[in-house]
Length: 265
Image 1 (cartoon, rainbow, N blue to C red):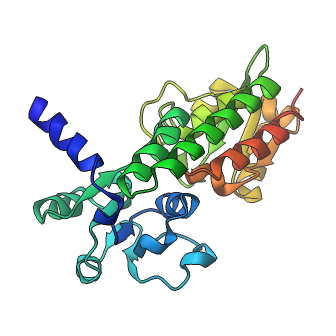
Image 2 (image 1 turned 180 degrees about the vertical axis):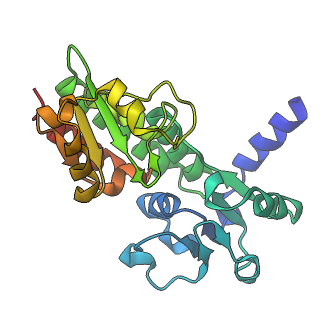
C-alpha cells in the first residue's frame, strides 16, 4: 500500500510539461479542461451532445458508450480523463492493459467535484487554476446554501426519463445540488445513480415538486391530481441542463434551480 501511495504522489508531482496531449471521455471533463484554461492541451474528445465552440474542431474518439479505440490511439494521448460510465467496463480495462495513463473522475457529491478541479489541475500543470476553481466553487455553494435553505425541505421528484420511468438516486450529484436549494430527492434512499421506479412508487412518496427535462413528461402527471406537485401546479422543466454535467458551470445551473424552487410555498 505504501508503494502504491508513493507512486501516486510521484505521478501527481510530474512537471506540467509531462502532460501535453489530453483526451476527455465525457462532456463534463471537456468543460473542466476549458475552465482550467487548458484547452490547448486537448487533442480529442468523446462526443456526447453539443460541443463548446472552443473544441468544435477537435477530433472525435467516438460517442458516449462507443469508444473508437483506434481513433484514440492515433492521437497518442499522454492522459485520458475518464468518467466511468462513458465507456464500457471492457474498454476501460483494455485501456488499462495498454498502459494508457487514465485519471478517473466520478464526483458523487459537490465537495468531490470541487476536489476534482484540484486533482485534474495538478495533473495537467494547472494547479493554481485548480485551486482557484475549488475556492470559488465552494464559496458559491456556501452562499447559495445560506440564501435558499428551508426549515423544512421540499419533497422533490427528479424525472430523468419516462419510458421506462427513471430518476436519480441519493448518491447522484444532482441529489446533493437539490439540498443546496432546500429540497430533498424523494428517492434519496436508493443507491443506484439512475434507478428505475414505478409510477406507484412516485405517487406513494407524494412529491411537492416534479422536475423533468420535457414538458410532455410533466403533463403526464396531471392524470393524478391528488399528488401534491399537481395540486400546487409545481410541475416544472429543469431550468438548466448543466445540472447533468459536473463541472464548474454547474454552480450557475444550481443557482438557476434555486431561483426556480423559491417559487414553491
